[in-house]
Image (cartoon, rainbow, N blue to C red; front, side, top):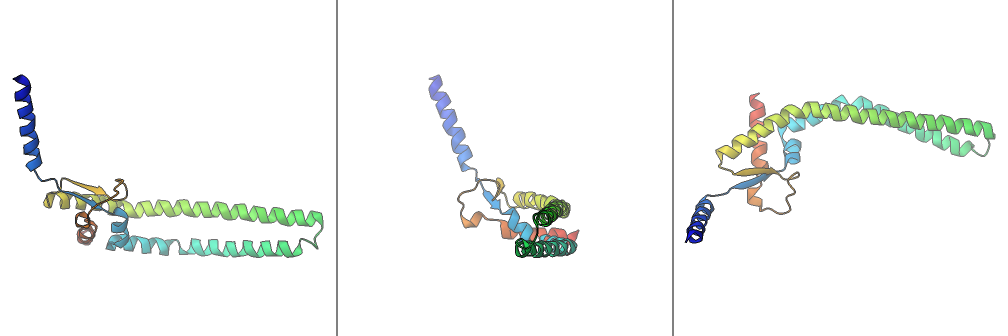
Length: 171
């Protein structure tokens, strides 16, 4: 008798929760940041900010390529000592180039984080507000959730881009 009552209770609870609508959506955060107005502006600002560094790296790469060609052309004519000296010079310049490239990457990543933090903070608030306003039970990040399949009608990316653009214009 007791088992029967418990079974009835569980069936009743399940039927009540089954009646409640579960609304789930996902957002492709990378797409939102890349295609939204603030994200595009931040990327343009990064490109402008680091153009000089990139040009400097390209010039150093060209210089290294020229030095390597010289070394290959002159290797037969140079004495062993001169050849070793040129090779050491080339290796030193390669190390300097690699260090500069890594330094450039670190600075670029730091600047990208600094520029994207306010956008991401606003984006999270926009998604939370959108989810509450439209009755979503959960909204997931498409990239980070491990989502393998979803129907197109639950992709909220374009709506969130529009909401983010509105929110950032207001700031």
